[in-house]
Each structure stands twice: as C-alpha cells, then as structure tokens.
Length: 197
Image: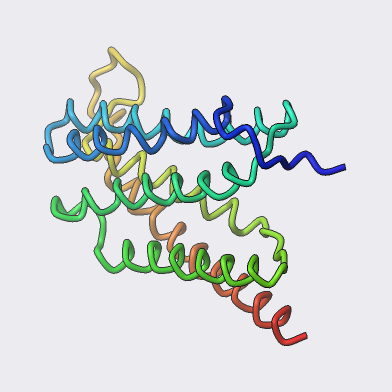
C-alpha cells in the first residue's frame, strides 16, 4: 500500500522543507562577508538545513505522510541551498567556478530528465551514487564555508593541531565533482535505456 497522498500540504515534513528555502536569503546575507564569524554562522545554518533535509524525509516515511507536493519541493529546496552556498563563495576564490558549473549543470539536467520521465509515467530509481554525491557535496560545502584555520580541539592553541578547512573543502569538492559526473552519467544511461524500450 502506497504512503503517498495528495494532501495535506501543510504537514511537518513540508514545513521543514519550507524552512530550508526560507533560510536561503539569510545564508546569502551571511556569505556576503568573508569574515570568519559570519562564515561560521553560515556554516551552522547550512548544517541545520542539511539536518532538516534528512529529518523531513525520515518523518514523512515514519508518519506515512509522503506527499506529491513534498516529493516535488524537497529536491528543489536541496538544490537551491547548495546552489546558493556554492555561488556565494566563488567571488572569494573558495570554490573553482568550473566545479560549481559542473555540479549545478548536473542537477539541472537530471531534474529535467526526471520531469520528462515522470510525464511518461516512468520511474527511474535513484542509485547509491546520488546519495554519495549529496554527502560529499555537503561535507565539501561545510568545510569551504568555514574556510579558515581551526584547531582540532578547542582550548589547544598548538600550531600542530591546526587544520585548514579550505584545503579540506577543496579535497572533498574534487570528490563531490567526480561523483557528481559519475552519478549524472549513470542516471543518463538508465534514462536512455528506459526510454529506448
């Protein structure tokens, strides 16, 4: 028996999705400044959005209130906040523009293909690559937002315990970009095979 319903739209999972969209302007404002404090709060905000992304899906499945509206809006909210964070850090040289272009292009193309598939009544299941892509993107963005040097342990000022979050972010952004291309190609191949039948 399907748990999917057409209503109600105003439920807790969808409220959390609306919340993710609503905090995007605040995230953008915080990222207008390269200051360490502003970036730290922007990181907390992005982390909160990432947690609510997992939470709304968990609640929807647990309570049996998966809605068509939620299935449509949830991925859009995810893509908007990822796009906002990546675009805002480009001017400060924290993320290569070409990597951001690859990541966002993949999301737009796959969203379009999913839309075409859904109009034809075709369901192409998401692979684990998509989940890994999301995880690496989130880790990369969190580190890139932090950007500055941080001590491994609060209160320990030894320079040997410093970690440069920008370098950590770039490392994971490379992985995220590779997995993004891989997952996009995987979905495209599945799409072509299904449509060709």
